[in-house]
Amino acid sequence: DLIRSVIEEAYTSADPRFMEFQATMHQYTPEQMYAIIAPTIPTFSALGNVVQSLDLDFTGDQQLTNAEATLNDLELSVTPYGIKGNGIAKRENGGQPSGQMGITCTNCAQMIDDVFNYAYRLDTALMYFNPQQAAAMAPNPQLAEGIKNFLLQLSGQDKVNWAYDIVSDPKTGITVNGKSLSIVLQLYGEFIVPALKQNPAPQHRFSR
Picture 1 (cartoon, rainbow, N blue to C red):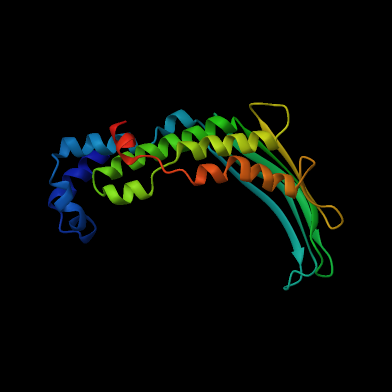
Picture 2 (picture 1 turned 120 degrees about the vertical axis):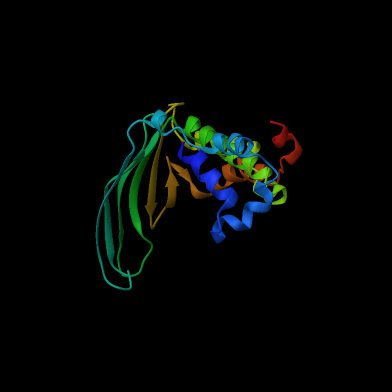
């Protein structure tokens, strides 16, 4: 009801925020406009409880040449999925930081799919108003698969809840679940880079 009332107001409002779009809006009836916008409205009730939590301790000098940070708790989650983490990092005498951080992504594949699906809904709505901009911002399905495959290769055996142990050591460098930075970059080049070079067809997306 709120969205419908805003649409009705936008058709005749003298508010500069609406006047910019009125010429495009008048190509559609208010009911057609609602049908375009409705799929972009998130179904918040399906997400259940939303948790945003950050507990961080930090000490250090102004130049950060000597500093220590302890991430006691980090959580960004809703009912179906989320991210949790904790860790510690330390830097002494301006040297390379050392530390460890653990991150767990619950139902990570579903989260990535849902993010991209919502991006499709936004982009489809934008197509009605600015096709060129929508085409430039088009979500890339190959990128979604590339991100999932990349993160899965880095994680452990659990195919649903992906866990990452990130370690920074001045002697051995940075590792993710025991994999060196060079291997991480190799996996990035294998799964992410090819997807970034692919451009989805705007016509196909619009027909969906």
